[in-house]
Structure formats: C-alpha cells, structure tokens
Image 1 (spheres, helix red, strand yellow):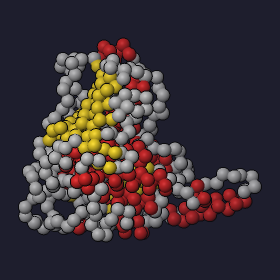
Image 2: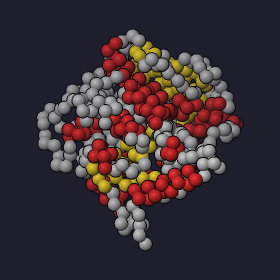
Image 3: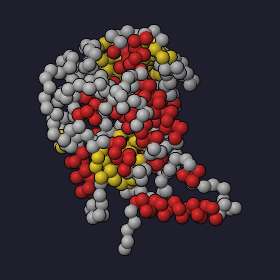
Image 4: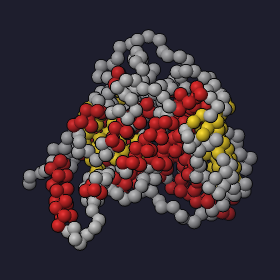
Length: 477
C-alpha cells in the first residue's frame, strides 16, 4: 500500500473538503474554520502532529504523557542540549534532545517501522522546516516560554506551555492577547487544574460549605535551587553538544557555569521565577478558581531569607490583598515556600498531617476550613467529622479527561481547555507579583492590574516589563 506523507494527507484532505464545500454551498452555510482563514483545528478523525520544544526533564515527562494519546503524535523536537544526566535531581535518568528523541522513536516505531522524528538544536529551524505541525509543547526554562509561545501562535500553531506561562507579567499579558486574537487552542501545564479535587474545591466553596472565605494559605517546600549569593566564579568549558548562547536567548551574555543549567536555572532571576512561579500555580490554583480572583490591589514579601540581584531566596512568605468582587468579600492570600509554612489550624486533628506535608492549601471560611494537598489534590473540610457531616457538594462543573487530553480536544475544536491562556495568564500574573515584591526589598507593592502598573515604585515596574537581548525581542521570532 502506498502510504502518503502527512503533508500529502493534509493537502489531499483539505483540497477535497474545499471542493465539497464549494459544491454544497447552496445547501450548507457552515464551513470549516481553516477555509475561512481561522485557526486550523484538527479533524476529529485525524492525528494532532506535535513538536516538543525543550527536552529536559519536563519535556521528557510531557512526551511520555502524549504517548498515551492515540490521536496525537510527536514528529519533531528541539533543544540546545544534546543530553544531560538528571539522576541527581527530581526527574532522574538522562534527558536532552538525543535521549528524548530515542525514547520517542522507540515508542512510535512499534506501530510504524517507517516513523521518523526530526530533531533540531534551534527551535527557529524547526518552525522553518516543520511547517505542517499542528501544535507545539513548550517545556523550556521559564525565560524562553513567551518567545517560543508567541512564535508558535504567530504561525497559527496550537500551544501547550509549561508553567508558569511566562517569566514576567508583561509577557503573560502579551501571550494571552496573542492567543485570543489567533484563536488557537492553548493550555498551561498546571496539571492539577484538571484534577477532580480542583472541581470539588470550587463546588464546596460555591455551595457555601465553609461560609464566606476571608483567607487562603498555601505552601511548598521546594525552592533554594541556587546556593549562595551573586554569580558563580570561574569559567568552565561549555559541555560538548550544548549551545550555551542559544540557551541564554533573550538574556545578556554571561560565561557558562553548571550552576545555571540544566536544572538550577529555577533559582536565578534571569532564568527562573523561584518557588512561587514554579509551585504556586499548582497549589494556589484551587483558591484562585473557587474564589474567582481577579487583580490584587497589593502584594508584600513579609519574609525572605535574603534579597539578591541574581539569586532567588529559598524561603519566602508573600501576602496579596484582593478586593471584594464577584459576589464575595475581600480576601487575603498567603504563600510560603522553602522552610516556611502557615500556622497549623486549631481544628486539625492531633497527629494528622497538614496538607501533604511538603505541599498544601488551606481555604479558610467563616464556617470552616478546606484543607487540600498540592496540585489541587484531596480537598477535605477539617476536622474529618465535619467533612463527613457535610458529604459531597452538588456537581456543577464538567470533569476533565486529563490535562493533555483536554488540550488535544481543544486542538480539535471541542471547546476551550480548562487552563487555556485566558486563565493561565491571569494565574501567572497573580503569582509573579510575589517576585516583584521580593525583588523590591520587601516594599509593599501597590498594583493597578487593569493598567499593569506598580503605582508606588517606578523601579519595580522594570521587573514587570523586562528587557531583551538583540535578536530575541519579545514577539520578534
């Protein structure tokens, strides 16, 4: 049997459909969006062809998740690092462009011996040569998220981008605007948003199970990825197979050091966003969703272990003030990371773990408290006797089929994904205001959300809107 390439299949299908649409114009008035120049949603019967940009530990994890989706196929990848040993870190094993490619090829070639996955050092070359991809999944370090995502949206590609959506607030605003204008399917990778617990939390709060909510506390023990203060000394050789200048991308040139990459970039202001960017998008999300939080009026870093122009402190406590809106009163939101945690609730039974220990959330209402784990897991009213007396809230929200599946459905025109960029960008803006506060040496930041302005500190505004190296300006790729 003569097998057509994906390009040939795509052209044949769309030519055929165009002809059929023209022939049936008198009988039908609805035509596919791509005929009208809109976003190119994938037909329900066809596969979504995806490129992975960023093949470190998180890129490898995402590719494995896509293996379980029969109507999706990874066809290309890009990463400036050939490979690296992640065994000392959370992800374990070996990742990078070549090991991830090998794993992808091994998976898909089981059913298709002719399968190929093209790999690129530079994702710009991928976009130039892989024009028939439908979508991209961005799993780069944070400082690359917005540039990769905007480049994909500009080309009409659907986008799944890891969290936080962007490295700064202005980028989040730009990405959300571009996605809305292009009409592409999007999803931020805060996968707890698809957890059953996220919906149950919303339904309990909306059902009045704990009364009017006044206060939220969430935490994660993560953080402290960079040690010491200031930039590392010495200029070791760049590892073979690593394009360091490309990895830096929009950031000013600096000598390579293993203190930055491939893992500990999370602890450096130029590349990461600290624990609040990495984990608050997970653990504060059930509160953000259930309380329908908008723009805060202020944020303050009430505690941090140190302030440095390069290194992100490992233990922080942030406080946001949200005004009354959407039928609820004002709300105070706390975030703790590293060695810091909120006070233990008096109603929590002796010997019972708070949250999941290292991660969790407390949503405190006038009539009770909901305690949950990280990633929206296992929300329960405390003490347990009170939960049993309450039971379960009425189901009022649709359930998610899974975070990647939810996005793939959106790629096929089946509605918005649950953390599409209209949602993910607002959540990202909220948590990244914590970074603005801590980088402002603990000064309370007054925030005009609609106008994206710090109203009491002009220096802090430069954290909201960063600068970029020539050749890597926002939206230029």
